[in-house]
Length: 362
Image 1 (spheres, rainbow, N blue to C red):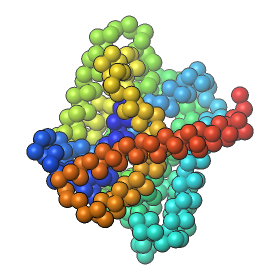
Image 2 (cartoon, rainbow, N blue to C red; image 1 turned 180 degrees about the horizontal axis):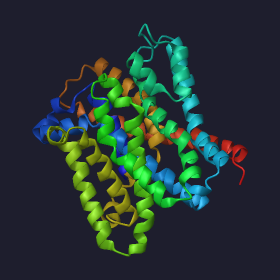
Image 3 (tube, one colour; image 1 turned 90 degrees about the horizontal axis):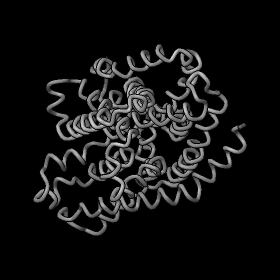
């Protein structure tokens, strides 16, 4: 559910950067603060993704190998490669072709950037570093910055599990301390250029560590047999997350860099609560499409900029005014979901199974 909402916010953000929601007739129906928050929450949504990613990878390790210390390196890396590489390599190949064809919106134009260097940064997981030092790449390349942070974390995660995982208490303290250090890490970057503050390794990894901590805590919670605990975590997490999305400027005034910790902690609490069944009766009947977006989040994330650029071109050609431009955003969400579903069904899942059978020794 949270993963689905996060990818929806990312798509809306990338549309709103080009055709702002606050300038449509929605402004006469919904509060402008809400529209501005929804349209500008892409970066926060990515940090929510980081927390979810850490939560899910920890659950995968615990479910597959029973303990963190029992993780098998070859299988772990093979699982990640089978999931990540097919779509990534295909995307990079398509983007390289579009650049060579001179397609607008896809051509790398900065003098200190080049197509070979962008390909290298994408495939060797340092797109965030490359952009941080050379500037923004075209949108389809730019989205790969968060993937670079995730995969850098997962390069070291199993090694840390093997080293410290057999001492769960020490592991939990170390990961928890790193998760809580997010404000300090952001403060340390306060004098850096804005692009690097947003894309640096350490803050993103800290958010992933928060997800790891949440998964470890969720594993202990069922033993407490307290539904009240899950209700408390759920409502607290919901309030913290909504507050961060709707009033981040106010939080920043009082908490500074600490406001991002409010978001990562809120998402972590929601994950623990959902794991315990909180909110299922309310959410299940009418959120199937949102949860479907969550399942397809990787495919949607990698491909949605094709939809955004195409619709923006059509919008400009059509001569439509801003009044009903929010309909184009709704269309972007629908088409992005359909495209992600097609990619998942026809390429992503078959490729993952094909690689899995050859790389993973059971």
